[in-house]
Image (cartoon, rainbow, N blue to C red):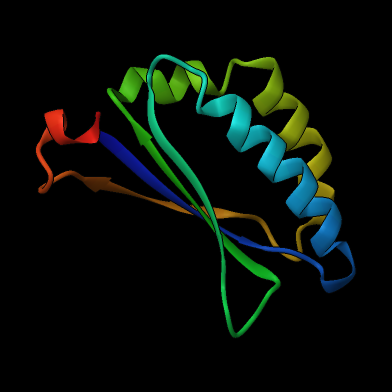
Length: 102
């Protein structure tokens, strides 16, 4: 598995718009064959901060995701809503094993 956490800080007045765009992107992303998981979480004590938890079956699947119409639609609409550029960290899966991701 290829796991990416994307950290996003949104301008306070744009939270609702960002959530709508991002939930649509996540729903479409979950339909991609190479996506094992695509979660959107919002920080409890600072609602302007979000993390996208993206789990791909292989690194190449992350690249394919960035070629989709829904990702590019999201990127173009969401970037102007951000208070700062997003960042990401890539992780290696330890548990569950790859079969455990369904």
